[in-house]
Amino acid sequence: MPNQNLIHPTAVIHETAEIGENVSIGPFCIIGENSKIGSGTQLISHVVIGANTTIGKDNTFYQFSSIGEVPQDKKFKEGDFTELHIGDRNTIREYVSINRGTTQDACLTKIGDDNWIMATCHIAHDCIVGSRTIFANGASLAGHAIIEDDVILGGYSMIYQRCRVGQGAITGFSSGIHRDVPPFITAAGYRAEPAGINSEGLRRHGFDADAISATKKAYKALYRQNLTLQESIDEIKVLAADFPHLQKLVDFLEVDTQRGIVR
Image (cartoon, rainbow, N blue to C red):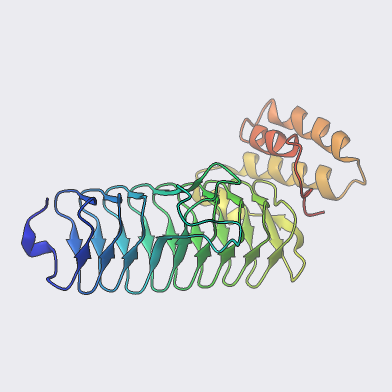
């Protein structure tokens, strides 16, 4: 157990919970059965950690966040063993809700490292979120969605169930994502449509002018040359021979997706 003066006397911690060193648990927090909290993590106040939730190191959870509660899925039955795993150095702001998985999938919701999840966001059951993402206020994921590394979701973006958002993509505010968004693409609109590449995101991650230009050519092959999807993939493979980051785009497009891509 950590130093007791880091745990407020009003906090309620289940006897089976495991608390790492130097964890700060503020007023009126609740830690559920079989949950684990890694060292250096801070719960500001009024944070609820549900059962079977594993949290890594150096995370910060702000007041009134609900983490690891049962999923909002009518198929979930009392006694189903499902989990939530959260990595290291994540910032979870006020009123964020993240649900555990369901037995209809892998029984797991999973969040990576170094994510910035702003107030009132929702991450539903069985979602997989990578690392270094930014979810602006109110962004929400329906069940089974996949968000890859370095994605930015604009405020109040809504991701439909089983959709994927590829690495380095960005959505406009209040966007409705009803199909997959390929890596490095900007998608925007009530029924989101492609709106160019995420040039600024590429620059921030160290891609030079030639790599960004190649990404623009890949975008044109996918969206501006009236090619079939397979023809677009073949064109992008040629570019990927010189610009390896575009292999991420090829791999994404070659997945047999349930939703298809924004197009």
